[in-house]
Image (cartoon, rainbow, N blue to C red; front, side, top):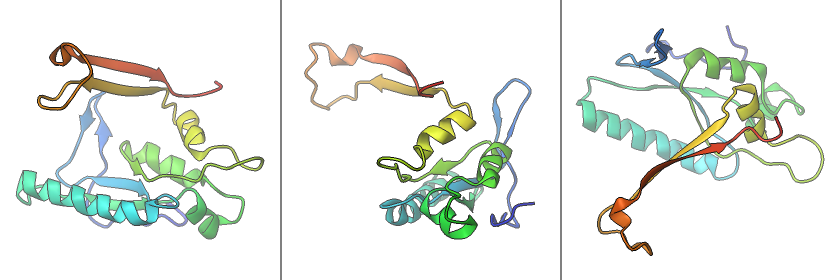
Length: 160
């Protein structure tokens, strides 16, 4: 099905129900992009932390099966020097509905455009949703910080 992506032998895809909500199996397959730079160091730790949280929360009844997909510098090593975002990576993100990515190279000057912007545009990720609320005990410059409870919707697609 994929050229370089290895699909885990166990686990199932997360799917969307007709009403748009997620149908998450007990053992979902979650695609991840390791990322460039510090992603090489932080992504394996993220996986360990998430796995530990799932184990703690579900006492072994649930488990994530991780599936590496490729973008950035690692993609150029696997797919060729000009392939920063392989078609099969975008397809896998769509096929598996939920995914996570590490930081990706942002080019300076000419050449390729931002991989983050490309992902947002190709996958129609047009909103950056940011809930904002006060946490008791955290210092705040506001007069009544406990009244802070809002959601910021930021247009995220740049130049569309």
